[in-house]
Image (cartoon, rainbow, N blue to C red):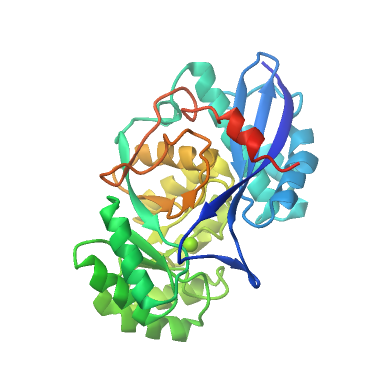
Length: 367
Ligand SMILES: [Mg+2]
C-alpha cells in the first residue's frame, strides 16, 4: 500500500469561552484553528493527523504542504514497527528548518496520520496497536482560559465542577487568582496553575512559596525562557511545588535534557507538537525510567485529542486536558467530550477511533 497524497485542511471552529479568553495582541482569539492532515493511500484507506496551528494555521498548513507532503508521497505505508524509521528519516531530511516549532508541528501531523493508518490496517484501535489497555475512560481536567478576576475565576470553577469535572487548571499568574480557585473548589479537587512562562527563577520561587497554601498539584511553565531547564530545576527545588513543562519542547532529545536537569515532576508532551505519537511514546518511556509523571498537553479537539486519549489509555494514571469552552461544532459528533462524571471515553473504533465529520469539515473549512 502506497501513500498517494498528503493534504492539509485548515478548519476554524468558533467558540464561546464566556468571561475567559486568550488574546493575540489586542484581539481575543474566538475560534479554534486546526490543521488536519489527511494521508491518502492507493488502497482507499485514509489516515488523519493534526498539526499544531493555534494562531498560525496558514503557516502550519504551508509547512505540511511544502515540507511534509513531498517527503511522504509515494512511500510504502509503514506498519507500527516501521513508522519510527520513516519519521526519523523525515526528521533528518528537514533538520535544517529547526528541531522545534512549525517543522515539528507539521511532522507531528504526518506521524499521527501514519499511526492511524497502521492501526486501521490491523483493524485495531490505536491503543491496542500500541500495547495493553489500562483504562477505558480517562479522567479529564477543565483547562480554563485566562480570566483574571478572582470572582469570575471562582464562579467558573464552580461551573466546571457542576459539569462533572474532577480537576481544574487555571491559566493565571496571580496569587489571588489561585486562592480564589482553591476556595471555590474546596480542598480535595486537584488544582493546577499554568503561567505560560512569565517569570525569572527568583520571581517564580517567590510565587510558588506564596501559592503553597493553595496546594496546586503543579505549577506549569513558571519561567522565561521555557527552555531554561536549570532555572526550572531551581524553582522546583526551592519553591516547594511540583513543576510541569513540556508543551514548548519537541522530540525525546529535548525532553531528555529537561528531565535529566531535574526540571520537572510532570512532563507535558503535546502530541501535535512534540513529533507525533512516535516521539510521545519515547518521552513517556523515558519519563517512566526517570520517575517523572506524564501530564499531556492537549488543549485541542482534532485528531490530536483522540491520539492523546489512546496514549493515556496505555497508562495507569494521568489526566486528559480538556479546553474549557463551548465550541460551535465538533469533528467527532460530541463523542470525545467529558461526560457527567468528568471522564472522556477512549475511542474503540479502528485507528484513532472516529472519522472526522465531513459536513463539519466543509462548513468550517478555510480556503
Ligand atoms: Mg500550558
